Length: 143
Figure 1 (cartoon, rainbow, N blue to C red):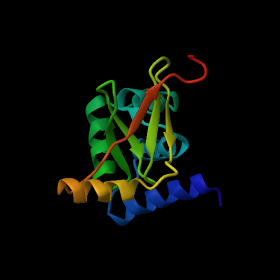
Figure 2: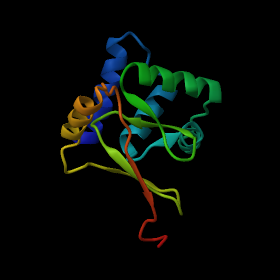
Figure 3: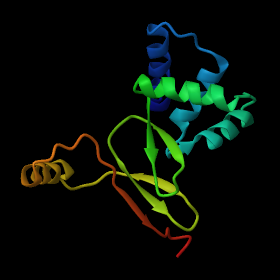
Figure 4: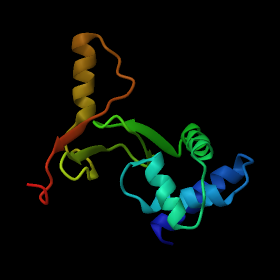
């Protein structure tokens, strides 16, 4: 089975198990989420839904995004432009953001970030609850 299809079916099953109906809007959101590989804003999501023939009122979409977030399907993130974005919660990763074309790409660090977090916690007597690490610059197309 295709990994993306399986991921989408898993999310749908989770909603059904929790007693939620699978509405046209929820189905559309799930399909778009598993196809995307980058954070999206509410406005961008509304545009993608519209292209699929699904009309979503701004308030309805925010309500659905809040539900998806409370169920642990997506997470909200704040990047440099102060626009609230969301992304599918699959694994821990960070982002590179082109300040020219505004493209956002996911990256995984190859070093031990957890080790560094433990060092900081010990040195500063600080318990980190969550962290955010983004790299800003220019992509090869904007150089």
